[in-house]
Image 1 (cartoon, rainbow, N blue to C red):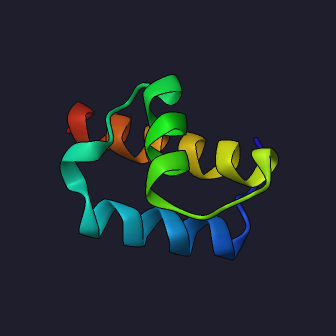
Image 2: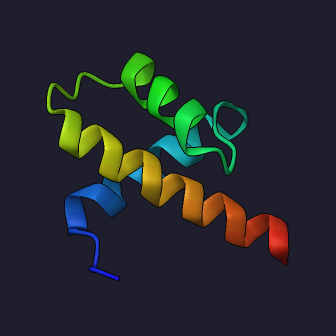
Image 3: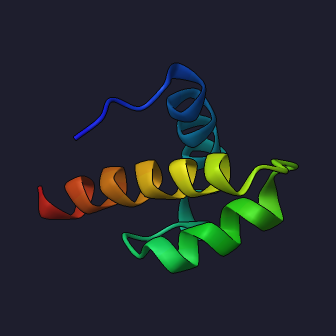
Length: 63
């Protein structure tokens, strides 16, 4: 699995701090939330952020 770039982690962590209820472990829902809550124009970056948040939320729920 590739390592996420620092900017993906930073944006993902800020979004989780500011909007903890807007995200779940579902990638598709997170894509829509990232699209609404940020001004990221790149589809690739949006998907990376949504995937990072989904993995992080999935790990939180597993604990």
